[in-house]
Image (cartoon, rainbow, N blue to C red; front, side, top):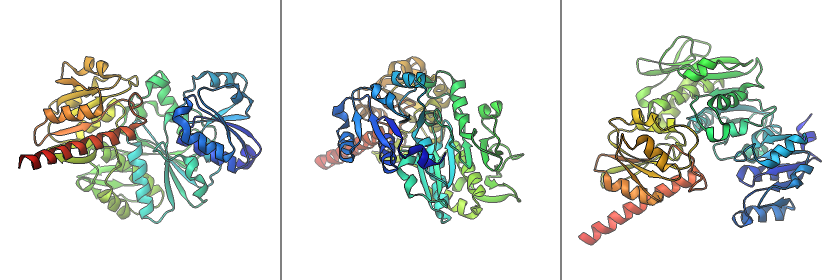
Length: 463
């Protein structure tokens, strides 16, 4: 069945009015579908979306999902909609299929897809790949879970384009034919257990990224990741591995302080590891993964190395946001799980004052104890999970509570001395206090700027 046959003339229900849901609604309407959009949130918070839908002549409902969705041929879900909501159970009972926005957009694209997933490093690796391919002159778009829906960019892509798609378990839950030419799993650690229940279920969903691949495709895995290697997920694609700890049987490796790539020919030196701009051992692994994929795309090692020397990283991921009175501030709001916090602690020099907390995602916080030894000087805890985090970490590190992120910034600054670092690395979801991790990161940066402005004003007054 062609994409047009799947969409034109069909009655499609879109569940969720977030950015991806709205992108699907626009795309489906453009391709001749009868579209109905439903969101459980109250109308007061959705006026921008409902105004747009009204102008486009698209029917919608807010404040809850009704049986109007059950008159549709199929449903397309925003990633934030859990499969446990009652309307989806009813749809399943009636045999109404539902798909992710990622799946829906992929029907309309005939170019090459690079799919990047994993528990940590997805955004950095996808962004890095986009920079490398652009430097090589490719028409590339980075989209997906990174914040720009695939459905929002697919119309601008051609058969010669490359879509680098960051893929989450929320999107992989409801794929059917999604088919990346190159699929990457960076690593696997417990995450989103509040939604998926068990680590085994979470991993099984991650492995769906390769289920539609063929012998003409590539599946790239982390040889150093114990979970990925233990499960050895089934795939028809050709497997390639990257590693920073070994060199046998891998397509990217580190030898004598230099990153090499070897996909088919002799090893090619990419870059000295100390020249890679993004810090930390986890980012060396991200660089190795990107080097393998870029080489599969026939990018020269010299081009890959040039980008690794200049790529500054992504916003909200170990982002340096300034220094106040000798105290450095780092925005790591993208660290929404515990392992990301551990990566941050291993990447930052000197004593650290850690701001963490938010909405609990199901995993324990004990790994922070080992990662934080001789690094964490103090904790400031926020959000719904702060008591739970205090129970886990409060005996190991001095800890204080704050009722807002702005208050947390002030308290961490009070505790710090010149040469130390205050880092927001929450280890939790953001939805208890913020719209998303980006909103949380922006609030942090604004609070740091306010602190800086206040210090400058006080200095002027004292003179």
